[in-house]
Image (cartoon, rainbow, N blue to C red):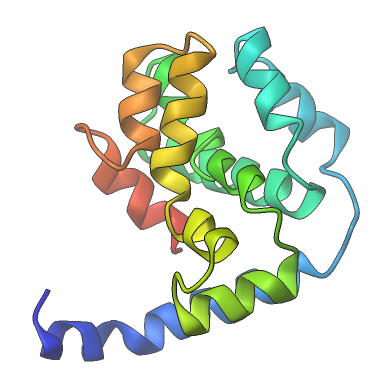
Length: 156
C-alpha cells in the first residue's frame, strides 16, 4: 500500500477503531436470537472455538457475519462461519480491551502483541485443527473469493 493511500484510510480506520473500542467496554453477551443464529452456522467444533471469544468479540462477530450474509445472500455455510470466526485467533493473545489498544498503537513488540497482530493466521490454524471446511479456514486466513466482502463489512 502506498503512503498516500495509507494516509487517506486513516480517518476511516480511526473511526472503526473508536467504535470498536466503545462497544468492547460492555460485557453483555449477544442477544439470544443472535446466539442461535450463530450456532446455526457453525459446526460443533467451531462453536466451541467461538464460545471461547469474550462477549464483546462474539457480539462483533455476529454483527460482521450478519452484514456479510446480507452482502452475500447466497454465501455457503462455510463462508458465513468464516465471517463469524474471523477474529477467533485473538483468543490466543490473552489481551483485554486496553491491552489490544496498546498492541494496536505500538505494534507486535511482545509475544502477546504479536499473537494479536497474527490473529488471522492463528485463527486459521485453530480452525484447520478443528476440522473446519477449507473455505472457512481460507477466509479466516484473509484469502479467498469472499475475503474482500468480509474485509469491507468488518470495517463498516
